Image (cartoon, rainbow, N blue to C red):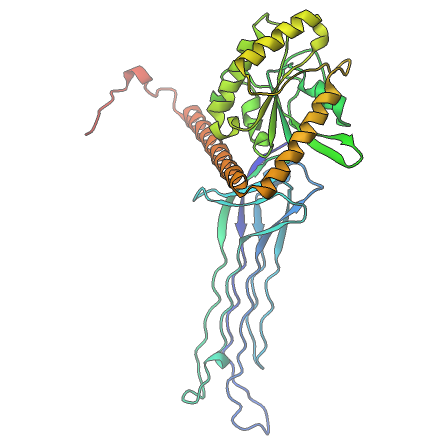
Length: 395
């Protein structure tokens, strides 16, 4: 199945039903009076988080979702039926954004969670509602109100505790396949990973965490180069970033320079995301000697003295149990601190909000660039070149 993590849909809630104008007309019932019933409420459009889904591809083929209209009221004080609710299934971890106001409508991060994204119109009132001691035969009714219409942008952000970061071919997929039951494609060429993948790492009988692997980043990714930048949003919900660095890059580049380049791209994408705890991991340690590995570790420790530092080998398994156990301990400690320290919890919530804003800004910027490209493609062949255009500055 094709992995699609962003889609735009239109939702239309149902209109409320019209109130009824009716008077009771029965034999042997004098002075029957008004008996027009109310209309029914329009149906809502509700998004439901479904753990069985892992992509937004269905919304590329079905972008419009409508709820049912409320029925009109009728005589004998009969209320019209409510409109049918439209329940739309989305993957767990989907963020919903109003495409016009840029407002974040909500996040569905728990299985079975529901969110009303378009409310149905209120029902109209029948003439029985307007009966009074001074108005025995009201002929007044109200129409049903229209339901909400919205254009929504859906963004899927994978739910994971740990996110992997690094250049293409840095060993991220090998690490995931070695510590979990996930089986991402592993090969000896860059950009093997084309879509994000998740793996569950079990440290003990009652201890586990979820790890996310995304396509590798390259220098200039924040400006649109490569594949990784469009999947960086899947690291937004992670609590720890693990930066994997290859000790012997194929192009002969310096590992420390490569690590700095990736972190510059991460900060350019989201400064708040770059403030997450980052662990440095030297992957493929089996390709170098123990002395060479220690020299690289010393260089990384000097560059980032406050970060945890590990060396691992996905092929031999060296260092992987220690890394997994340390990550599990750090996640548990963070959970405890979040429950007991209100200031820490507030700071984390503020950081998550800032990351969400950065992810949205990046998505809108990429969308604007795509729209500009479409306009350029549609431009006539005889359009003036940029050098031929005179720019007039207006004060």
